[in-house]
Image (cartoon, rainbow, N blue to C red; front, side, top):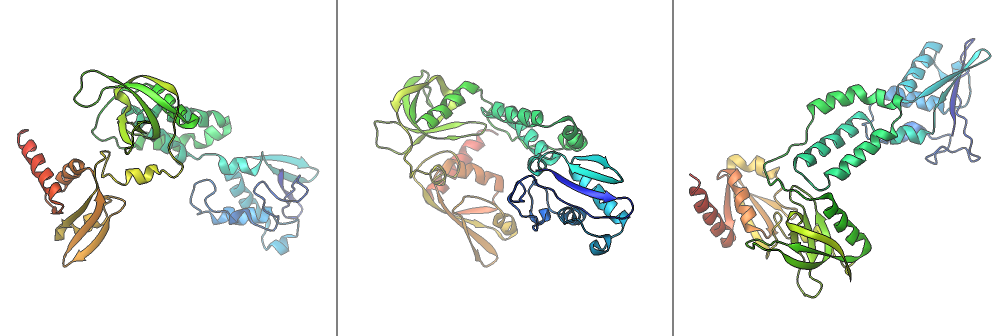
Amino acid sequence: MVSTFDFDFNGIQGFSLHCNSANRHDDYGRSRGQSIGDERGMNGAPRRMGKLDRALTMVEMPATSSERLGVDRRTVERLRNVVADHFDIDEVMDDRKKRFRIRDSLRRHYTRPNAAEVAALHAECDARKAENAPNAELLQSLLTKIFASLDNAEKRKIDTDLDGLGRLQRTRVTAGPVVEVPPETLDVMQESILAGYCVEFDYIADGRAEPKWRRVVPYGLLLGPSTYLVGKFPDREQEPINFRLDRMSNVRLSDTLGCAPDDWSLDGFLSNSFGIWQEEPHDVVLRARPHAVSRARSWRFHPSQSFEDVGDELIIRFRAGGLREMAEHLFTWGGDLVIEGPKELRQEMRDRLGAAERSL
């Protein structure tokens, strides 16, 4: 599609939009009577530029008189400048008329990343690198491809904002394990999922000094500072379990077919746990003291959580396993949350308190 709008220096003729397609629709299937300004958030930025909306609406109007447009020449020129701020425009002289052409397809302008989007991806890349996450290399490759897709003019347009956001914007990296996982290990896991084959590896389990060979049906990947393969032994009737990628060696694709059932949900599997550990779910009841009610109400404990106001306190309920992770999380509340149940969680907290005393 070629988009043009014309100016007559003896008096404004108006604007016109010329489409090469026979049905007179643009790249998004809109007819000439529909304003480009009707789209919301197409480039990820909030809709906040009324002048641009007005200018683009005028661009799509057929050639008409300045009286009908209700504007003078200076107004149209200002609106032309608004369009130029957001699109790459070529200027062509045709007798006494100037023709301004929006370069390339309109789709290019709406799919081009802005500085905030590139900076957000850049921050994620840096954070994943700091964590030695196995998908850090994939994210960096994506960022490199996005930069390579921009021409010099596009790079100059976002360069200043990108520099400012890049210096003063970070994704927070918290304390946690720093482990090495070869990128090839993640590649094999993803290949096994796509191909529908089991994956084989030597694995060092907790408390063991020597690795043991495993063949596992891949059910999913949990990415993070410690990345896990969710898998199931093909010859056993049991729930999937987690395997840490950094404890694997000699990882290879198996000759044995194996994939997760179509009705299996990774999100459903994760909802059974408070964190990463999988165990029998418990009905957990916590009570927030009065001064901690506001904080607790705005906290995400678990996807199944519910709240109940009881006097000036707040009751939090959810169902999940992973009692040790729950107890360790409750340390961060400094006694502002009281464990009402189950009794197994209270015992786990006593054990954690006993272990904490040994660190003093």
